Image (cartoon, rainbow, N blue to C red; front, side, top):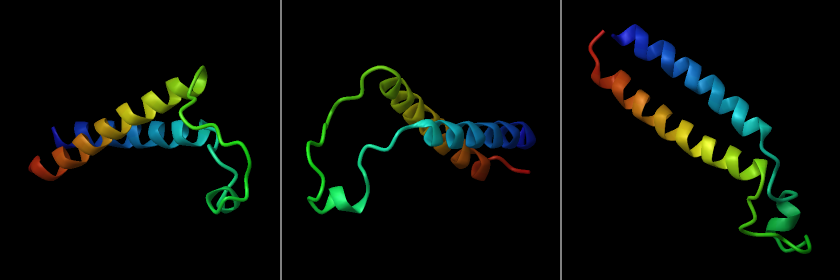
Length: 75
């Protein structure tokens, strides 16, 4: 059972990495954080960005649950 959960954990980790890297940045970096950027669009996650955001949240929850499960399951 441990090895099955471990394999699923590794797969979810790889998927989570790919999905996070596919997302476009929401700001231009430190310049926007300090007020240097103009016209920030907060709350607009339409199209593909909204789907990737949702998938990221789901994968992160699954990843966290599997990480806890790996600690509980005896080897």
